[in-house]
Length: 368
Image (cartoon, rainbow, N blue to C red; front, side, top):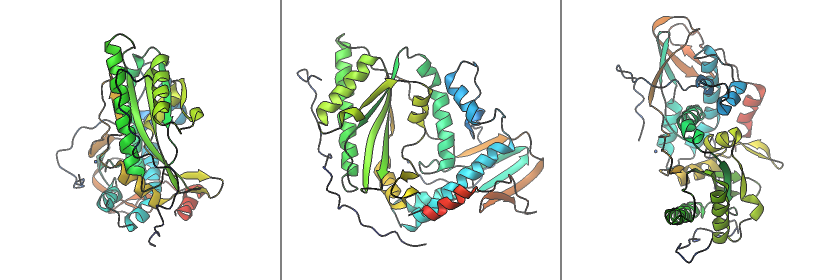
């Protein structure tokens, strides 16, 4: 594997790392995962696919969308096949992330072991998970957990809005300090709203905020931004107004406000950075050095923050067991992931039959 040449920090984009503001009454506006399978297995939620979160009410918009994306079958070989696919795509770029000799190298190796060994007893399959943000397998579980966990909270919001707050792109050197400043400014902003609400001048702030960072391969820059679901149009507009007063060079049209719907929830919970970059210049590609910079910048940060809403732990259980209704029963069978599927270590029989599509195979050739 070839080392990725480093040629960073040459961007002339404006530095936003020292943009902070003081609000006052005059202002107007992740441990190394142990992958040993334990005898005493924890009972974990069955969250391998979004389809496993079945609606209690057919009118639930979130789950109607999820049902359209996947079959309604619970815990079938199809869900394992989807996991095989997510591991195949993750491994495609993971090897090159490991090759970077990054400060996250140990954590990248943990992801290599994520769900790499499955142990079957009767119809129950047990595996371990790395809980890392760059792991597609774990992200699918995390997305399902967050949607399911926040569902009761969002049902209590009578007028939810989806807000996007952006700033101009920055280079890699400024990314960490820029994120620090954004988080500080947003905290000051929400504290100020809290003071106004206690004085009866605004509604109480009920919101959840997510930090996301994406990469622009055209000008080699990074785009940190916030997605927020907030109750009440007045609060949404007030947040946007104050954000633009802090970041005066931010594009007004990019600070978006719209009514929150099912797409808003999926957008909020699906990822903290896009693994695959799409551009007219290079088409579809994966830039591992840029991803490494983003993951380092987000390390040990809380990407989700709630205000007046119960916080849901976004971590997933290290060890999970699940029963699959349509697999053949075996006692104490071990499967190891090799290439694109798990294989029985005794018989060599593959578990799911997953075969990468032409697109998924070609993606390997577009990792830069």
